[in-house]
Length: 220
Image (cartoon, rainbow, N blue to C red; front, top):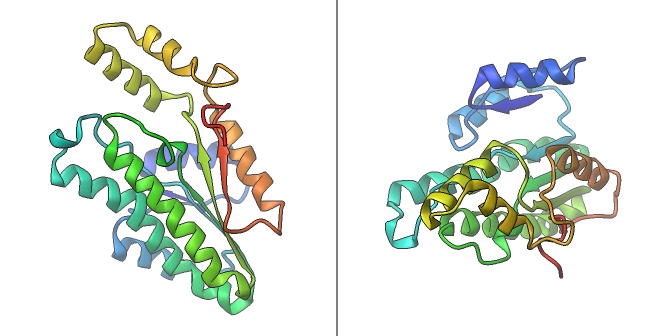
């Protein structure tokens, strides 16, 4: 089951995956929308929940961020994780088994200028993950988070364009400067993020963990 706010994009994803894949338009920041999804799946076994809905939010100094922008980022990035976990945990508890992976970000663990709503929201996801893991671990449920570094694609291209406009350079130069901070001198890919999720699910002893996948952008 793949969910998101834009049905047309979901249909493309479902077709790419193939097989027995369903798509449902869901706004994870909306309690009623999440409840409707859970009701539609009543009686079916949801054994794995991957919370990967998220928005980047504004690229601006904190003093230039509006309350509406701040609230939107937290509604999607944090409240969405809370609502989805709350909706799908009870059947997992009843079965005594389940796996939850929340997609956080290395940006929640290092300074990222002009991105305070996003970084604060991702740190919140990590805190939610570790606490929930201790709440439900004894019930047979694992809860972990994956923190990707910058993922190549349209979102990062937009960020590089914003940075170029702000600093008077080019998007290519902004990207080169940015990836130069990583050990592999590149960003990670969407496929690598998906592979990391599968690898985490293959480790039954893993819980309350936050895994970095940043091409060496963050080293601890």
